[in-house]
Each structure stands twice: as C-alpha cells, then as structure tokens.
Length: 186
Ligand SMILES: [Fe+2]
Image (cartoon, rainbow, N blue to C red; front, side, top):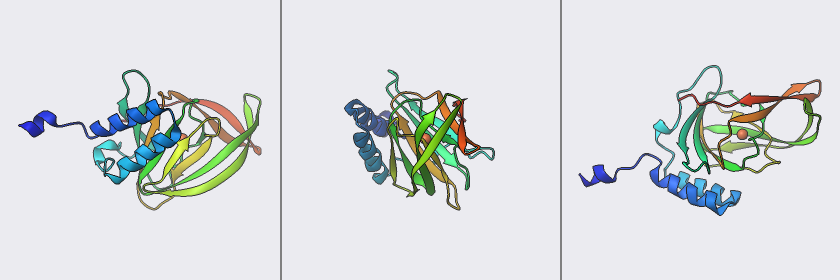
C-alpha cells in the first residue's frame, strides 16, 4: 500500500528538479538538469510522448506550472518532419532529444521590417539522444526536426508558456514573417 500512496506521476521528481532550475534563472542550469534527468532514465516512459501525426510533428503538454513559471512539452517527430524556422515567443528554455536523431539549423535575424526578415545561418548540427539545446532569445531562431530514419522524441521546457511563435518562411531569398498559434495534440 505504501507504494500506492507514494506513487508519483511519471515526471513527479523531474518536475521538482526542473522547477529548481527555472528558479535558478540560467539556461545552463536547466540544460544540466535535463541532461541529468535523461541519464537517470526519467524520459523513457512512452506516455510522455504524443501519438505521431502524419501532417506534422506532435506536441503533448506534460506539465504547466501553476504559477506560470514554465511548461514541459513532449514531442514526437516522424522521419523527415521539421518545424518551420521559428522563435519561442521571447521565452528562454532548453530542449533535449530523448530518442532518435534530430537536426538543428540556427539563424540570426539580420534585419526585419515586420512582414519580411533577412536571416543569416549561424550553424547547423545533428543532435542524438541525450543532446541538449538551449533557447536563449534573441539567439533562439532555429529550424529543428527529425533527420533520422526512425521516430524521434524530444522534451522541451520553456520559462513560461509559448502560445504563439513567429515563423520565418523562405520567400525570394528573404523570409516571410508569420505569427502562428501553438496547440497541443494530446
Ligand atoms: Fe524551437
């Protein structure tokens, strides 16, 4: 009976650790916490991830802090599924690849007139399971997706709840700036 009484949700202790890292107010602290939790197997439970969708990658809200300090989101990416180039609504955070291989291209917004922006590529890298990326505006504009041959999963923590984001869609050598609403699938 004791085990039933003390049983926690799959992310119970992990949420406590994430809350402390958010309070610390440093991306390096949050990134270190996610890496440590990954090594402990905290992100192995398949219930943390939404069912895959054929149309686009899928997002599942795992935890919303009651005080609005952060959210934790699990994502599922079929092979070849990428998010458009985007920002994170001005929020900082971190993300960790937990299964599969992802690819990230980062950009610098060189100039923008509201409707259109000129982006300069800053770097590109593969991220295998256990790799952590930091989200640190204004240097958070990136394209992220599954470059591997199997389903990929990732866990994302934002210091707040991004309900909208800015997407940058390629157009004539520049990028068209578009506000998009973010939603959850499960
Ligand atoms: Fe992102």
